[in-house]
Amino acid sequence: MRVPRSFAALAIIAACQLMVVLDGTVVYVALPKIQADLGFSTAGLSWVVNAYTLAFGGLLLLGGRAGDILGQRRVFVAGIALFGLASLAGGLAEAEWFLLAARTAQGVGAALAAPSALALIPANFAEGAPRTRAIGVYTAVAAAGGAVGLIVGGLLSDWASWRWVLFINVPVAAAVVLAAPAAIRETPRRPGHFDLAGALTSTAGMTGLVYGLIRASAEGWRDPLALAALGVAALLLAGFVVREARASQPILPLRLLADRTRAAGFATMLVFPAAMFGMFFFLTQFLQQGHGYSALRTGFAFLPLTLLVLASSTLAARLIPRFGTTGLAATGASITTAGLVWVAQIGPETGYAAGVLGPVLLFGLGAGLLFAPLTTAILGGVAPSDSGAAASLLNAMQQVGGALGLAVLVAVASTDGVAGMARAFWVAAVFTAAAVVLSIVARRRPVAPAQPSANAQLAPDVNTPPGGRTRSPLGKG
Image 1: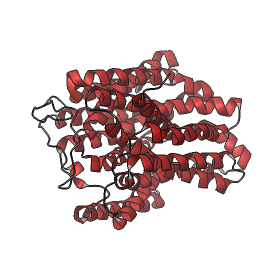
Image 2: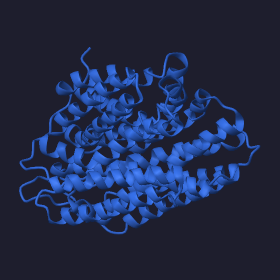
Image 3: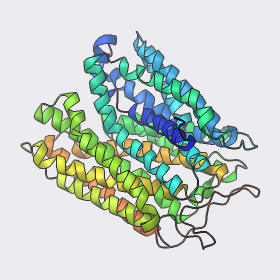
């Protein structure tokens, strides 16, 4: 039976996103076995995770713009191919440096593939229900991938070898590379050149920012190296903004931030992952250290969240045409805030069923209701020539938000056991409450689409009725 092209395209894009997100967490539960096998020090072991995060976060803006200029499918396939080859190399590693190099190469491949995967949705799915459903599937996979990674990592490392947490990517990447040219439409190549100064400052600035936040979460906010990295990153990113304002073909067109609605969407993508990463981090510790859960059992403890994210993301995609994105995004953020306030009541004797399962279910429901409308709102009205830049900035906000949130929440928790975790959950609730406010503020006035260069054609806005007046992507206007 012939598989519909749209179904195949969505399956390929979703598989890419799952690999990229899953790879950020799948190695966590395998770290002890990696350390025993390759002889990592405790400090060096953290770089098995950090090498991937740094390369991914640092190169996202460059990767997104590469797709705009060279063609999104072409860059998508190249990124997945590199990701697959690096996964194979990492699984075969017999030395520390070789594994770290492979993890860095995985991050480079992910930085090329992830923005293009999202940017390919408007190019391959018609405006309205088809595109909204595709975004719903994409965001469901993105939101659930972290929890899936914990389960998959536990299964593979316990039943096979830690090497299989990397080898599992190889057949998936090969299938994507072979199938993508036939199933996915290519986007037009845009005449132009790479802004070299913008590429250097954005890459160095983003890398320094992510490194500084990783360092601060591990060593504290008074660590000189963390402060130096954050200071240099601030200077580089400030220079990057100045450069982009003057560049004729910028890596990040600042017009994407010129409208209030889209800017609020990007800000929400910064604060919400800050809460989500913190919840995973502290609940994992609470279950493993406080209740003696194994890594695999901990992964399955998050399975209800994964299932509810998948279900509520699908539901949100169907509700967007009826209710608009603002109400759904604000509702989702409100539900997650309630879940975090609930879990902030935990104590040393709190059990999973009594004090963890309920908050996990609320968070899963709220995250699913928020991510699909928010992604729809951010991409609404973006010119095809800017789709890669918008997608890369969305991914960058998630990466920076997660690293920033973890650094802040670890500092808040300090070493004060469960009481510190409870404080961290209260602060995480403030992050998600800020997402509620941002959704409401963004609705206050209609927003014009981001205008590209003179001859570029705008992609239609998901919330603009045929023949009607443009409405805010975050609401009914």
